[in-house]
Image (tube, rainbow, N blue to C red; front, side, top):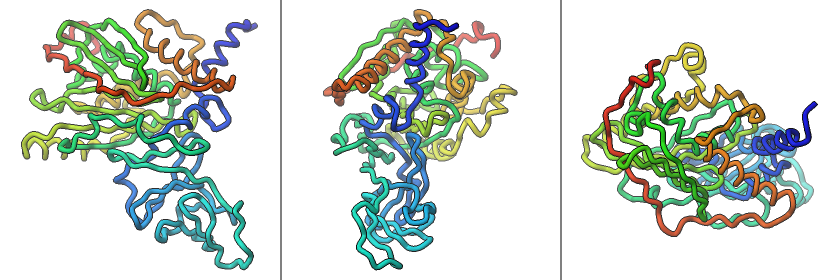
Length: 397
């Protein structure tokens, strides 16, 4: 028989993974702006179906260029709204022509003569475009100012900018924990082949420290005096780090990774990368690489990665993605944390869980949540010195 303490622990772990609107975590996540799509993929006068935070929705861009997020189905006969067409900044159902504005209110029913009720509406959520990503606020009431997700490193006007998204069939919290686990870099990112990320960070085991900030968590991993890596992690799921360029001579890349639940068994990984512009030749080479890597989704190569250990021959994006995928999918669709055996190297995992459990507890008891705010000063993210990688300690390579 499972004891009371174990039941409580299992319930707490389960609360970290469940994100529907009627769950404490789902309510918490809906108090923040969340990325929901890539801006370049939504052209003017087009619509797409998306699922985010366990909710099916319609995302469309009006003729004005403004993005709108409304419910997935027309309330008339329940057909999918994204299969219709966009008129101005409104969307019309292809079945019987019912039309909705960006707030989700039905504004026209061509075959009906009765007055349209204010209750004739579907969901409608505010949106905001930032650095190539479309964000939405899916909470109740007026949205907060779009400030917490902003970062000076993502706003430099002369940088090259690249965005991409992957969908993986596992729970979102595994992704979030992975971002606060620098020890995995010493092993997972040395597996299969060593790319520029594994080469620069090396396989050395870091000393770790954590600090809660106004925006989230500052993580520091010290591998040597010349190999100090800092992560600026913003609540609830964005990890800002610097990663090496494609070549040793390239500038390091500012990277923001957001992990957003599609539902409890699938996660959207949104990545924003900013690369300092240097020479026309280097800019063209880097732009070409990111254009080729943009469509890579490790989940499409599940058997090759998991069963045959076939990692992509790639210096950075595809390789690091594949290595993370193998580690996270190896935990199962939803990790069973009740059977873990944590050690001192997992202090970031414990720190992160306690942070979320604190906020979930506030939701459950009706207490105020922490008012997270963007850092007043940018976090210094030092660049580790390059060293020769010693692969002797990784015989599998």
